[in-house]
Image (cartoon, one colour):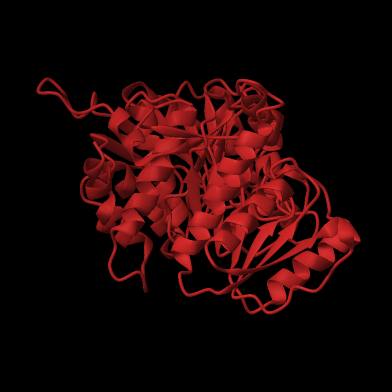
Length: 472
């Protein structure tokens, strides 16, 4: 396992199987691993629920069930009353336990539980007892976080060696409860999915004595329309608070007055507009004129959805020489194209559903697959927003960030993230890394806000410098 301070590995079922098969003496040594795993589960349950006297351990037929049987023996030796319910026996009576141990399915599970197993899952969830899941909550696909049927609502999940994808990607992440990771002696393994850690922000270039406002990162923000001037202002201010040295805003001429009043430090340039006050292809020459002094483009905040504006967005992305982050209304009507430079798309579930021609419910149920499909279709880095923000690069690698808080569910939060990504692109970070680092900074900034109620996007902007400096 990598000892990197910037990422933790997230294992799929197949990757975890390879780690187990590399253990000395496999497969005969699996019993040894099972004893360690089951003992760790029992010890965790005893430590967390010291007053519990009665346990019910629900076991499946695989190695996860074997872990459960070991846990049952350890619990009995600790003086607890233990009932074991094995799915193969057809027994359905859970009794009246103080704690339930869920050892029904392990990391190899996928698809929908059979009727008998589904009934046990529903009974566990309906019982008035906390559930400790072995390795992963039963019913969750460890490789994707997807659910094809009922899943256990764990209070605690005791997993072995490392996190699994299903622990952090929704909807599976909402079933894990508190996660405890136990070392049972397994060796290093390789993964294609990683969890971003706060130390990722240490990779951001620091300003040197010789830095100028341009070398510190110059961002070009293009957006705004009548009634939506706040979005472009939030993106521009966020870019500055994320340590960009120079920010230029291109907005429709009629939108310039409120932008001038809101932002003092940014340079503002009025652009030709449609009769409705939106950007059109007539603004392309102005953007081209400004590009040589910029290192990154933020496109979309408050830009509107008119057909003229959609044509402007498509042509700009085909022509710009700058790495671009595309958000909000710029995603509306976006079509796969041959981008001239790297592109980062930052949809929420509804926007991604529209891009893929699917329902948002499908995206919410298949988040990792949806992000990968978007990346494949648009040949761009995809950042899918959410409690488990997912970044997928064209290479197929995925990064998950879970630094955010519910406070980020507020209007304008996405515009702030756009500005941060643009600032990090301007500082020279590779697109997928810039997107992941920005998600970390965005989430950390939200965590620093007190109290965690009544939070607005401007609060997140103001906390960005502290969030970025804190983990360097």
